Image (cartoon, rainbow, N blue to C red):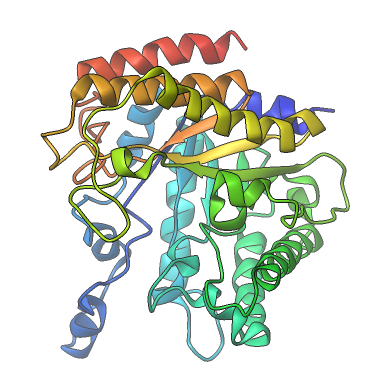
Length: 363
């Protein structure tokens, strides 16, 4: 039987279908369309954040670019019946079509529950600190439907219980961890009970806010499972934020345009060493579900620093036996792969992934 560590090593390099199935209508576009007699479609949803709808060709481009795994972030909130919790069949069919195209291309696929766990009015999962029974009911109904829809898909499909979930309004941090632990347990229980290939599917368990330090905290616990060695921890990596994410001065940081000193590289290596000590050395694999850095409109950033950061993170992840999954919006902010041509926008980034592909295969 394949161990979880072996399974994750086999996932190779990963790519996120960012800003496609995960956007939320920022200006109530969906309601405006519906109230004026129009029909809001899954294609409309995919265009919200400046991408074209996902295509079968794009799935093949991802594979040809050297990626073996695609993560499909999905925000479900706007497609849930407010009374029954049922997913709109049109939306479920669109998600399934994306999974099927990815399967055809020979990709492993991760499907998650995305901005439903985020910050803002669409982040209903975070309200569990105020209404745990209500959130559990909605969460359960959603995962029952996803699990049932995909129960017969083979083990190239991975379910991820949530995305960057935290509970900033919980009375205590201990309580916040316990809320996440309980939701993760609920996720595992629902998927396993649905039968079919879900009985022993590999499942991706979101760490606390998918942050390295917070997830390595002893208060984060993996769920109990009915099958041994089939759980994986999800951690995201956007550090240091002042270099990777910041565009301008703010109350949380001042942007840094240059990165790559020995000390800065060592800080990244230390983060990955923490992941290794807490999980991998104990037989629990880690998937870096997202990593990336702003490529535009921050032209003032040092390009060589960008390249060095990407190369460092990929190296550290692969050395740990983890699967690094690049966050790629393709049209704004973090742009790496042209979805219409299958070519990287930056030849130097393309070279990184050619090198990384060799390293991944050699594991």
